[in-house]
Length: 360
Image (cartoon, rainbow, N blue to C red; front, side):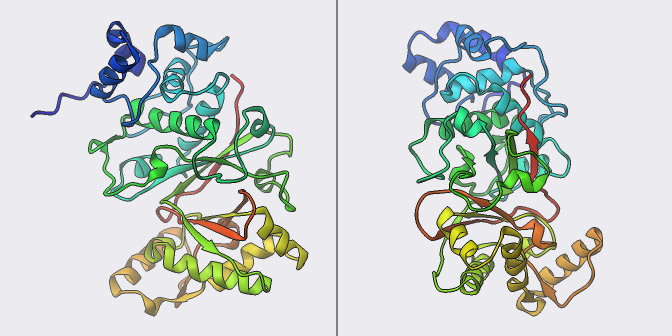
């Protein structure tokens, strides 16, 4: 069986040709799946009427991003975004958020081209802060990375469908991941600002408390770490050593990237009661991650050395989990429990990008 040629027309042009075949939900799903416009799961047929409803009063011709989305290097308009939102089953009012998330990914420091096309398991973790969390009813508590929340599931899914259907990161053609991970279906969370004793994450990146923001983080999956409740130092030691085991030592310690730790409110409270703020926690995690280069193969050491030269990092006989403590991203989210989730970074130079959510 031969693979049909890739249709590189804008998604809405392709949908015009398909809509007459949407005679039922089942037929629409078959047609859309065969056209390569789904993620393998059932979708909502994006008819012209449904796309118009999703757009509301937004101008469909406005560009959704300032720069093109690789690997297809396409600048989508808001109608393209709305089509993906319908496919994913989103409620109304989410197009500006999806567009803002995609626009953040076009920042050169994020390296979306590398993330989209690597054989690694890289994918953007979408993190929200500010009033939009309550406005869109985003889950930031129990099972924040799991099932059960329609907004988290569908908005994250729409972003992935846009990366596939608009930017042409298609598995096996553009998206060359060896294994991938389940976050490539949907991977969207929000900080538990109300439950946190520390200032919200976006305020540490220069934004105001009442601003709605989206942060995109280049991650390669997640690993749970059960934390001790003895001392802050024991918690840091457990977290740091688990990071070294769970993450890609060579990738993390090239001297770049920004690994993330999703810390439950209970753990942040535990640290705060011992006089620790987010900054002290970052510094302790960084110091505790110090690892001898001798642990690694000569090949890995040569790559680390080359990367340090490129980034202007001083030579050292040790490696760390990031360039600096500030590059270890701490996001307070989730429900009850003293378990953290570690999101290893992808690549050596990629940076998390935080942007305001544009109203258009």
